Amino acid sequence: MTATSRAGPDRASLRAPGFWLAVPLAALQALNVVRAIVDPTGFAAYFGAPVIGPDAVAWVQVYALRTAFIAVLVSVLLVRRDLRALAWTAAAALILPLGDAWLSHQLGAAPSIVLRHLAIAAYLAVTCAALFIATRTAGRAA
Image 1 (cartoon, helix red, strand yellow):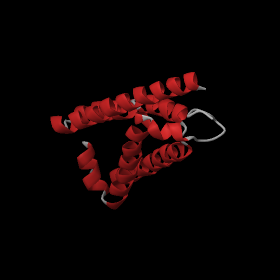
Image 2 (cartoon, rainbow, N blue to C red; image 1 turned 180 degrees about the vertical axis):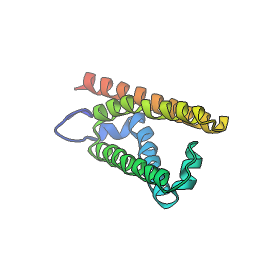
Image 3 (cartoon, rainbow, N blue to C red; image 1 turned 30 degrees about the vertical axis):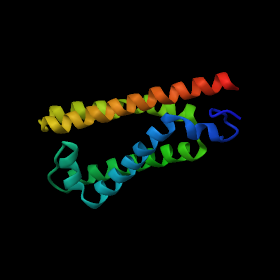
């Protein structure tokens, strides 16, 4: 089986740098879920979109639920070692940190917060490229 096979995982995917670059992304999403649920006001400030009032806090918790889905999805793809699905998920996910950077900039967040979102986007882009390279290499080996 190849690293991109739908039938199941193989050991080659564990040698792919993209696989290991994706692991901290899933962990970061899980950490964001916990932080947003435990301290929604603090997380919103960290994110660059401070909130005031219970309605705004509820939206941070909605964010946490959506982020939990992302964390679980990426974790499942990692466990399955599905590099192709991880690559496409990473490509689609690029809109998130780029949008976060734009949103936090629009809200007047500190430049360091905007740059953090852009750094996450850059890391995600590198991960995406590494995953697509791994799927292409695995396809040739098959």
